Image 1 (tube, rainbow, N blue to C red):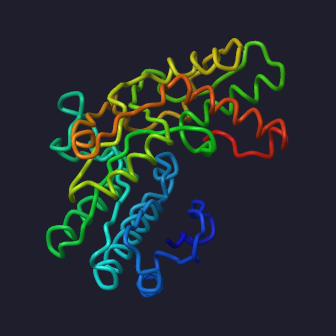
Image 2: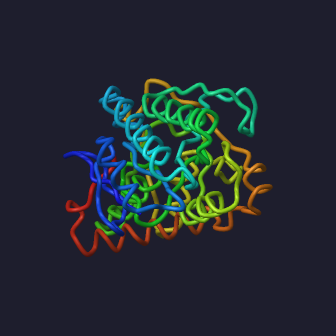
Length: 295
């Protein structure tokens, strides 16, 4: 397995096992796949922040699609027998016609990141159909857990709660965007387990990776306060509101469960508690200003 070496300012690469390659370079990607001769490929690299995608939509769409194309074509040419998992997103569905959302729902992406993922998802499906590459499209809904950067909603909120608690604030101020938006969160450790099972056992196709339950931002803020043992003062920051925001997105993981036996095992309360504890450790050890803050 190769990690991703991205250009300056891009997201952090995956863990290095055998080397590094810039997935925006098709020739280098092809050489890396040829040298690795992989049985399974997990394509997780992406510019993955919805907020940042609004700031630079062209870059988000361009790089997320081109890196996916680079990986798929390299596998087609150099490792045609490999099983490929492409990390898609629950964001590709946009406003649902009904809940929970299953894999037959139409793709209606509502932000540049979602557009990039929907395009990459369709590209992966085309490689499976046209080139017979064994491609799994894992449509992961929101996931969270210890170690996640503050570019993501639960991590950003947990960081604010941990920082306020360490500073002795009472109540702890927590700034968010739309407090009523409801999302389907799965612990990242459950998500990784789903990816491994899909790559090993599932037939080509699209699979939702989700908990099947939705929770609002306001409920998350209150629960984080309870985890940290502090009172919180929830403030809505207009600067954090998005141009479009789907009111509720909740997925159906029946296809994934039927294919692999996977079900989510880690409750949201543990995810929130572990995330607050991780941020508290990071901030106490390095100083509040030394760890990336909320966006």
